[in-house]
Length: 378
Ligand code: SF4
Image (cartoon, helix red, strand yellow):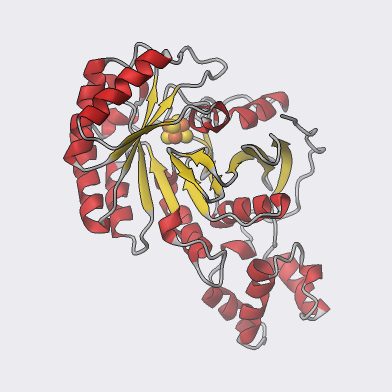
């Protein structure tokens, strides 16, 4: 593992209101360019530079006039964030720390092909992206929520994570999971816009079936996602199969208790005709006992979901510990004997759910930012 020094803080001079190019749809760019007197085909040409030819600046777009490039630069910045640090080696899981235009940080994680990613051995290169700066949902095992919520990411800031990690690694990514910092369904508009751009032929071109949205269980937004026309996949940060256990570690359960959540999941399953994944972090003496496994098996069976078990990885400043291998095996055996498809993810470097957010937290604390208070959600 290595961690390059974070570059000196430099804010990009981007007006907060400027819609960055990588968050725009072709028809929006077309309309804007038409109002400048440019031909319709110009939008297509520009988006080809961005997504197919992967131009890193407007200066690279040599088929455009200098005047047009200058105007675009001042109205629709191409890149508004940059990689501030990378942790991990090229052939292992790598964490990227991004500095945003307002000096905030988010993280992405790149998991190489042929490694177990999110419960499945995959020949795909997977990126785990963030959807918010911080998080309001305060799950008790998670570093992302430790400093509270700062703001939603814009669509371009989500798309950029994919483009920049690809540029840095020199590899095309073909699988995306919204399991980084933030609750993606609390930023529904930006996340779904980013998904449309990521999956579009004119965009990054990663099919929606290779995009997974992971939520802590916002029931109304799960139904909204079920009605979203693209076949994205759904994963739930489940972590407790009774209200008592779940409430202890996930305050969101007070607002959307399990019966409400299960009803929304059944709706999603019926609309999308897909298997939902229940993510379950095994925490010693909290949710790792045989009765917890039996309750989880019942819940999973009721919606034909699969379960991905993740033995807890220590997070600095949090009190939880990982159960023994014996306890983990016993838990898995109960699921399997209950006919629930289940996997266990033991490779440490890949256990990024709980650890996600730590890199950003350290950086923000180093810069003297104090944790902000999460807004009330209940
Ligand atoms: S697990 Fe997800 S929803 Fe919960 S605090 Fe962490 S980032 Fe937020």
